[in-house]
Image 1 (cartoon, helix red, strand yellow):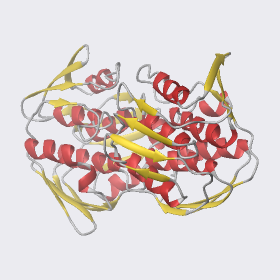
Image 2: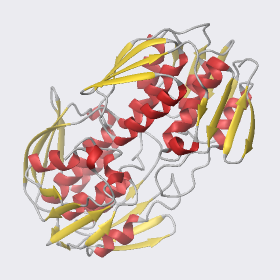
Image 3: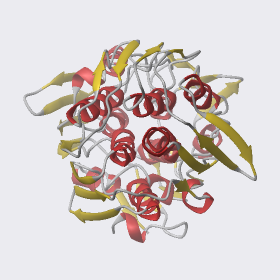
Image 4: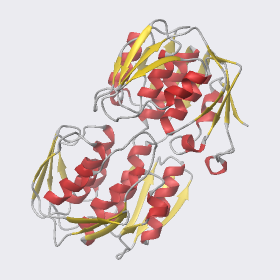
Amino acid sequence: MNNETLSENTPILVEKSGPLHGSVTVSGAKNSALKLMAACLLAPGTFTLRNVPMIADVKWMSELLEHMGASISFNENELTINVPETLTPEAPYELVERMRASIVVLGPLLARFGTARVSVPGGDDFGHRPIDMHLRGLEELGAEFTTSHGYIQATSTGLTGTRVLLEFPSVGATENLLMAAVLAEGTTIIDNAAREPEISDLADFLNRMGAQISGAGRSIITIDGVNELHPVEHTVIPDRIEAATYLAALGIAGGEIEIEQARADHMDMMIRKLGEMGMSVSPTVNGLKAAAPERLKSVDISTLPYPGVATDYKPLFVAMLSVADGVGIVTENIFAGRFRYADELARIGADIRVEGHHAVVRGLPSLSGAPVRAHDIRAGAALVVAGLAAEGETRISDAHHISRGYQDLVGNLSSLGAKISYS
């Protein structure tokens, strides 16, 4: 069953499994592909993006670009985007409310057309994530904003380069500023920029289009504005969160697997933490190989901006700690309210006590299968991998959230020996 057939009425069923063996290939990074698609708005012509995951979020971003006037075609994991000379610079509520990443069309629309009307974004349900830094940074470049009836109206008579200091290394704000600054007059410096691999992938894409960006992947990025950009071909980097999900499944079920295309250099801190838990993870010519003992050891985890432990990894670590030997304390430093899935893990027997932005996880030898609900993409993935350690059947509803971030999580885990299927 593919992503398009998933709905709220199509749960995922998981039974206790292990050990896992075999190999699996990760898709292109969702968090990069969506931003690259938005960046195509910066120039007319035909773009080709390869290694694009065929997931719901890509489908929705495609619909958003098509609403503006672009034409898009799919050929397996290759995306062709034809951008006309004129576009409708509007992102309506019915498209934007599905996913938060759609806010990144704001920067390229402002840069190229000097105007944009974008609905306040939706997305995963794990707490309020303000876009103030996006708007404040773009204002410093010369944009003006009004907000009414759920829409942000942006205008500019011409963006001008300046130094923008982010109060926090926000990935989305860094991406919006990058895409706006490439066509601004003069030089823009983004200070305290996000350093994620997806930022570097976006900068590489923009530089191939003719932009002049240096420092991506470091905390200070310099952009010298250019007059115009041109369409290019590009291959999306591998998805480090998907790779982390297979490592978490291995940590819970035990065994030995290979993860093709995964980049160890994009996952340094997670690999270090997994090593402390007793797992062996090492790079290969084509990806990673990993082996896990019958039971991991508990450790403490704190989320931090890259290169720290990503907040997207945290639900996976909580799932692993729920069956590890000992007690682990997990601290969320990025987003408030991202422990909602703890109640769902508790339904399958996990011993988790949440206190503010901390969770104390006492590992148990095994869990007990029960009906649970996925509140967001990574929480859903955590429930899936936790189900590998639960006696009986774990039934995960709202699996459509999982399809937003994984091309075929069920099929890939099944190929490794997991007992998992759609009902």
